[in-house]
Amino acid sequence: MPIYSEKVMDHFEHPRNVGEIADANGVGELGNPTCGDIMKIYIKVKDEKIQDVKFKTFGCGAAIATSSMVTELVKGRTLDEAESISNAVVAEALDGLPPVKMHCSNLAADALHLAIEDYKSRKAGKGPVGKVDTGDHDHDEVLEAL
Amino acid sequence: MKIINLDHFAATKMRPEVKTAMDPFFEQEYGNPQSIHTLSDAPREALDKARNQAASLLNCSSAEVIFTSSGSESNNLAIKGTAFARLEKGKHVVTSSIEHFSVLNAVKSLARLGFEFTQVPVDRYGFVDPADVKKAMRKDTILVSITHASNEIGTIQNIKDISKIAHEGGAFIHTDANSSCGFIETDVKNLDVDMLSCAPHRFYGPKGSGIFYLKKGVRIMPLIDGGVQEFGRRAGTENVPAIVGAGVACELAKNEFKARQEHLFPIQKHIISGVLSSMDEVYLNGHPEKRLPNNINFVIKYIEGESILMWLNNNGIMVASGSACTSKILKSSHVLNAIGIDPALAQGSLLITLGEDNTMGDAEYFVEKLPQIVEKLRNMSPLYEEVKKQKEAQKATQSA
Image (cartoon, rainbow over all chains, first blue to last red):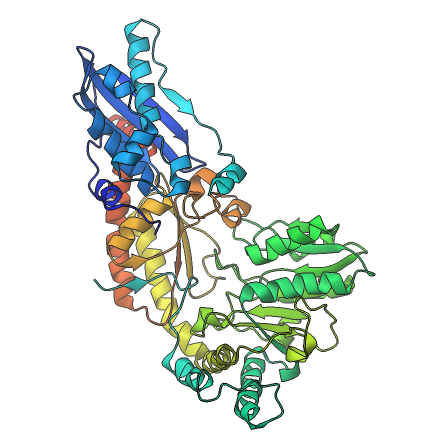
């Protein structure tokens, strides 16, 4: 097993806010099945606040835990507050991630930002934007980072 | 919690007989087998005995057994040792697309020195077609190295036919039997090979031991130059305890060979049929019959291997996966890729390797737990979400 913190294990075993929101007004999907991680985040925004947030994730332990953590961090927050949460903040809230996972599986905040962007785009009448294929990782770069 | 090891390719527990035989050579009989004085007597005799035990398992002469440190070292010795010894004959090596990294990367290292290699493909079950080996052969081919049985998908190759082609082309043949030795017959005469690698730690011997069969008359360059140990093919003071342990593991394997198969086959069968019948969109990789008795490899669609592993681990079940996240080099298994499994699908791979400590009860427990874990993870998966919706829509149209 990769060495995960107790918080990561807790969020992996008891993920918060799993599911879909039928009347979501923002959806962000990010990742690539070839790399092993896809995160989909649904938000329901009311009065510029994230009233509800849910996620679905295909991926490893870190991918599931970061998704769960990001939903917990932003629920009830304003959009501005949510936008200021980075992948690093999510990892820190989980008491850190193994180095290799920082690079690959720590995309939950990006998926959330995409959901917010999607919400704003819909609101502006430009239609949904919420799906991004992140492409393959540069594996040599990952190995060098270790 | 009870630990159920379904990852025996990673590690097996040494048999008590192995440890008992090794024990005296750490303290009492610590002598160097190469010395001339009395301290060397017991270690030297132990070495001879181990060599005979290994030779008996492989059906060769004891002068054809070289002890190494690992299966990986044996593979390196076969490939680089042959390449360096046959420089004048040629620079081309033939291998397959499903080899272990210790073959694949050894060949790639040679390529950096100016050698060339051809990787023959495999079919969807993982079989190398001997006709493809024939096609790959060139005038300057010095070595053909094909695994006896894949450590990942368990498919057992038809080595004898491949050996014939290699020999007809003037090449030597090496087979990586690191996964098959101790579980199926690895008779070097029947296989008609010039070199064979065997890893005793996979069959209840100690880690840090490897066996390399080198047919009499086949010339290789040593990778470790030095003294006359291992007939000058592998210098360095012998790891006597490990070699003694390897020898005992070989003897046990020879004696218990049939009993091991009879023990493993029903457990393997129960897991395969149990898993395939309890879930949709789960597939068995490798051949249904012509596979190692201890190997099972599934792909489970819409979920990722590491998260399956972690949940199984929480339930006391230890397995491996070919997913990118579990690979340490962040690439999904090249073996699954070679049999036509899409890299995205390989993320959901599960590698189960059985051993003598497994029981039918373990198989039943695994078959009960896995579908619960799969359902939990699929319910979280955005990939499954869409499939589920499609299925529900289908149902609705059918009932309407």
